[in-house]
Length: 412
Image (tube, rainbow, N blue to C red; front, side):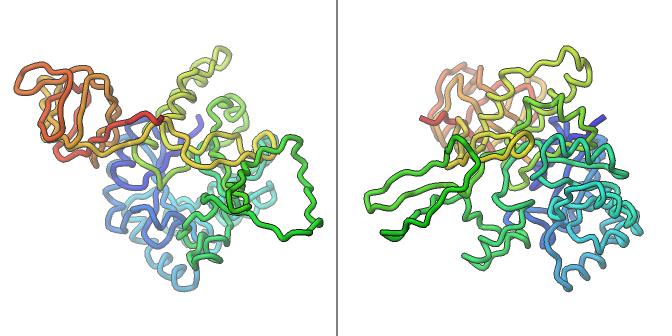
């Protein structure tokens, strides 16, 4: 059975992905992971992370996947005993020098995609060092992944959904060159996602296009100042929901969703959709069908448009910005939840009406999406509520006091 591995950027995201069927979660530790701008977890949080994951029978993998200098490598080595005592299952390592120490502390050693593993010979060497799993390079085709996995003496893992970096396996120097903020140390400011201006000197006829792509689709638009603007550094997001059977047949042990810096509702939605797809295939491989609503729901949360990365061909389409159908607006907070009548009392600072779609998020609640079908004020049914009111809504799922409430507003 393949493992569905989901991201957790904070405790709300952790609960959200577990509630939606993640078999395992991965998360960052302050100072040691590739998402320094996400909230992350402290060393003292790890026992609670393990406890929460244990409630769902899920495994826990701690990301320590930045380039480690001597100081950071020593600090991490010194923290391995405490990490092990927190009952975390394993570490995702970008530095093979710490595999032996990781294993000797009773932790699984998973080799990060930052190591750019592209062949079975590397996997055999990693096995000798004690690694249990390696995340394969994102630049491999599905045929290559299948071939490598069949020859591999250890587990393999691949990304199946989420953001794709412009650089090979994330080894990028653009952020550091422009801002002095190193992507390889987890502090990327993502200049690749910005709208760039192209200029060239008059009379330069030495610009030659060597592209093998028959149909150019880079987005280039003219500007009033004579320059051209483009997002050619920014790839679309990966989405493999339509190819679950092919992925399952590859023999890969774990399917990974990217997105530790994204919102809890993103994690909840994406994890839930892939959970359905994997379960449906495992129950009835011959009768498996891709549901139209899966892609529609995946498109409803943050995304830059979708592609299949390198799985079937070299990707060349670029994306200008978030392609989600909705904007998420902060509109209120939970005051109380009444379990006997399945209703929540909300304090709202924006108008609300029957038919609005809301998201409620909290550390224990996770992330719940709900379309309002019943509201009351002081026991009287209402269709619309103005900001500044307290309102009761019918809600079958339990929420907690001080949970955040967001309204989804459809983009024009």
